[in-house]
Length: 325
Image 1 (cartoon, rainbow, N blue to C red):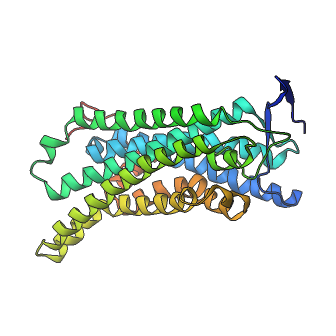
Image 2: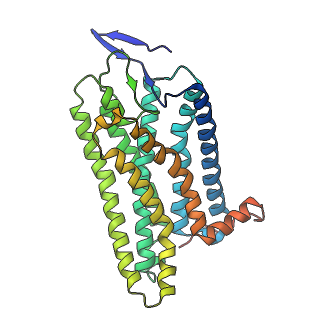
């Protein structure tokens, strides 16, 4: 394992980092490799099946499933940014990652996390319109608006990550930077910086506040309105039917927000402890694995479409558009 350090203008320029990962015995490393490899492949398969099912079944060409397909596509890349490098490190003694590789991994990871925060808020808004304004739903959630909302989620994620990277990449690192994590994240990088990182911390805090707090407010406001509407429904069957349409999304929101808020609402020094690695595994590995399962278990339409996709019963894409209102 070699860490290359260059001397530029009497200052060291680190070209590699060392990811400490999960330091355990070799036999346990092999077990972790097997578990995480199976989890990674299963996550890719689940999300791919959901995308194919939504594309091929005309009954799912609706705004809710259009956004779900974006979520599945996002999470396929979300886990791919992290898992391959982590799997290699389980089998290798050289756990180094180049500076450019680290920054690239960080950029795409931040992009996907920020995009998911905003996308989950958009999906909550979609459920709000469907339940609170059912008669106007086809008029409001038209193809153009849905496409704009989805594109806006990706654009905001890309721009947020770009702004953060401008400040993180300019930090100065000394000696042999050892990152106490299994992937390059902002807080661990701030932790190993030996220069003044106050400006980068301030920018990171402000952008995190915008990307986490604002979508969370949209989610809370949407579900508060949904709950008020459901409570006004006279029949118990009507209440159950209305709630079942958003139960899957609410479960996914709770899982994603609870695990990520635990990590990113804590001081950067908390990354000196291994407990944050366990929490990070929850939202980088476990949550993407569970999300497709949650949507399938709670949604009969998705389950039916998946059966057709798996058994190749569908004769081809149905419907004329990507989705219909």
